[in-house]
Image: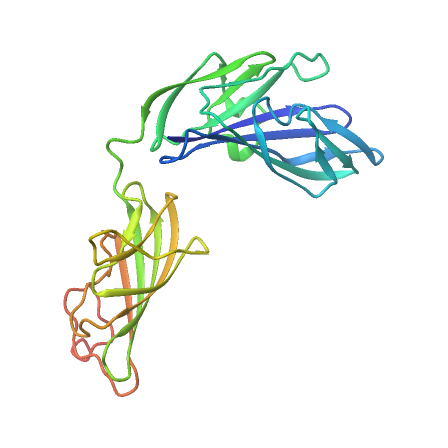
Length: 306
């Protein structure tokens, strides 16, 4: 169980500089699997005439390629190198790969005098999933190296040819996760007949535990979008509530629902979750006026507050 990022930075010959980023993933409830994402982040600087070059060591031994994304014609060779038809400019190449087993080491198994003698690897720990200790490589100050700006805040390590970065797992998961940090904005449209509300909820924030968001029993969920993708609405066994499964800590959720239980008294949030910030807008049809509201901090347009 864990998610860590290791980033490689190196400079090659023939007017080309490249940066490679590794992404390791292991998900709970699945076979122990780790993934590695290699990406030649900008700049991939090419000068001179158009030609074909080979970028060696793009795919480390044991990794299985999943996707190669490049604006230049590119092909992944059997030896793990990438064959690219380059032309002058700045380019980006991304190679996504996975490893079929859980990894405790990443080795730079290279013995090539034409390749840089050392590389800089950065490590982005996800402590809410696992806590690891890195050994067998030399830590360096990222501000004194040429790592990309977005990696400056990450711990960096000097990895020489033949070196091995070892991960010692100290703890899996987080026994005391911080509370979920969520905010919700609600829009409630009252029916012309006054029989119920059509509701649109917008939920943003970070979730650290629970990994499921359930509505209250009186709420009838109709449609849920999570981070731009439609979600399957499910119901747990022996439960009358509907909800969705969450797989990422950061979420942007939009939900459409109906409430017909009561139009005069209902939950301020509509979900079985605590929110740090709640904002609601009630939209009334013609002929309806808001007399008074209790249980809220601000009621700008009620009859009594005027």
